[in-house]
Image (cartoon, rainbow, N blue to C red; front, side, top):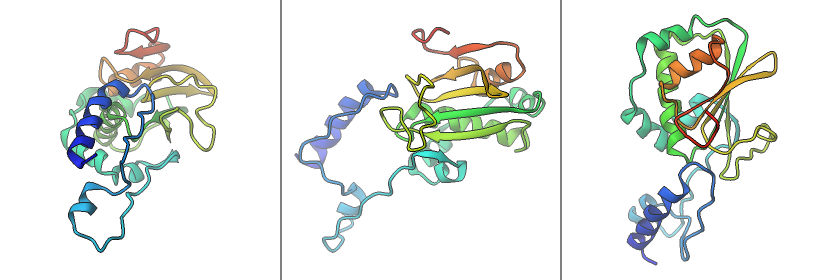
Length: 199
């Protein structure tokens, strides 16, 4: 299978996989060599791309990944009013974000969230934990176990260890607004643009 055929197969499978976690089948004859290293005419030694992190990760780690860099450039601007309101929510909560570095929805929502954090002045009265999962929604530390992940990203809002609510895959009001609603206690449960998650 040549590179063009591999790209066409990948593009055909990608919409089917989305961010539900179905693992795409490996393309026959696919190699671990990136197109960039193949085109560079390197001396025969195949360069393997840096493995995407799994488990607890930092914003800084994710922002070095090329697809996150692209998402930052293309991402929507958050509502400045809703972003600044995040700095005023009652303190003490934790927002645990389960994400797939492989998932475009995760990149879209996280980049918008980070832009909101920056607009809010960077300091928030709640903790943020980022947990990168694989296609099966698992991570090496087991943080995703028992959470009931079906789609990523899933932003879970916790107070005193108890879940108040979650934003799943897409935030209909914008992640900065929908998280604010949960953090202020104006709503509990599921917020999502999906119709199949009990929103």
